[in-house]
Structure formats: C-alpha cells, structure tokens
Amino acid sequence: MLNRAFKLSSTWKFFHEECERLKEIFSRLRYPDDLVQSTIRQFIESKVSEDSHTQVADKREAPIRIVLPFKDQKSANVVRKQLADLSRKINADISPVYTSRKIKDEIKVKEDKPPLVSQQCVVYSFQCSLCDAGYVGYTCRHLHQRIEEHKGSAIGNHLREQHDMEPEDIAQSFRILRKCQNKFDCLIFEIFFIQELKPTLNKQCDSIRAKLFV
Image (cartoon, rainbow, N blue to C red; front, side, top):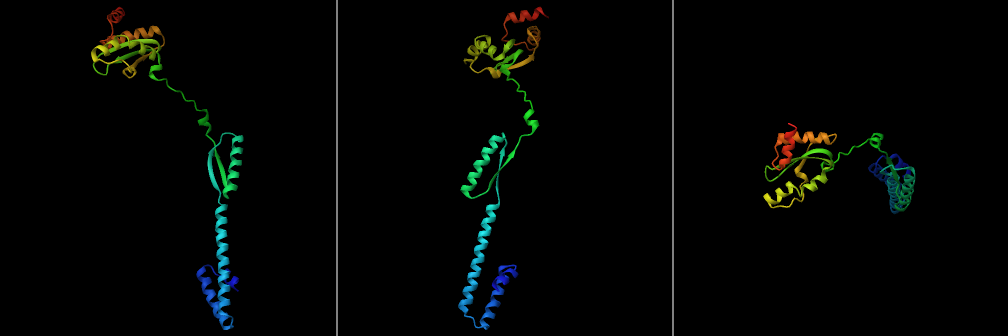
C-alpha cells in the first residue's frame, strides 16, 4: 500500500498526506503504532536513498566535453585513450571534441613586409631628432649596413660634435624616400631629393653631383 501511495503521489507533500491516512486506517485496524511508524520510515529512507543514487548516476552520465584542435588521427587516438584512462580513474565520462582549422586559414599566404632596415635599393633620409640637420643618400645594399657605416660618417660626427652623444641607436631617425629598381634610379632620385630637401649634412661633392644633372 505504501508503494502504491508513493507511485500515485506526484510530490512528497501528497505522499505525506497519504501516509497520514494509512496511519489512521491501520490504527483503526489496531496495528501497533510503532510498527506502522517504523514501516513508513524505512520505506521513505529507501526511496530517499534511491533518489540519491539516481541523482549521482545522472551526474555521472552527463559527459564532460573538452574542445581540442585536431592535428592528425594518430594524435587524436592517443588523446582519446588517455582521456578514457582518466575517466575510469575519476569515475566521469570525459569526451574530446576535435575542431579543425578552416581551409582558407591553412592556405592563406601571409606576406611579411621586411622591416625598414632590411630594405634594399632605396633612397633614404636621416633627420636629427635634436636639430634640423638632415642627410639624403642611397644604397643598393641592406639599409642597416649603410646605417652602421653612417655612425662614422658626417651623421655620426654631427651627433658627437654638436650634441655630445654617441650614435648608438640611430635607425629610428632614418626613413625611406623612394624604393628603386636599380642603382641608376637610386642616383637620379637621390639628386632630386637633395635638391628638394637641401639636407645640411650632405657633403659638397653631393651638391656638385646634383648640379651636374640639373
């Protein structure tokens, strides 16, 4: 009768009301109150224990999913086996979910722009950060090589004599004025920029060379 009342009751409140009715019925039938009370208590404890086990089982049944990037099938099999071993140890279902990169990301070509000091065949300028002194030149080699040489040229001498400082890190004071195709183009555009910018650190021979092409 307790089991029938439990199944017909949608909540523990309704089941409690049914139990009270059953107590009254068994009392009229002259059943010992202690026996009735202990029977109902044992039945309730068994149902509560079943509910607890059911809740634990439900929690265990819910898988724990881990999102991982897919590398190759061999690596995926190794990871799956390791997670299965871990699942048995902690008594939980751990399942890997693999994601793969989009094809467009795999075949996308990224063209890295070379830094300023790695440029070749360029006309460049130097601008002193402490005054208006400037210089215009060209190089067909890597610009960083020419910058190193300028530490001992008019640029380096200017920094030592006018500002009492060593030309250690001067790359940031250089900028590219023109990217050229060959040495002749470099020479022509160097002349044009010298005439336009009138840099004070260019030597007299640079000015004479510029006048020859004017």
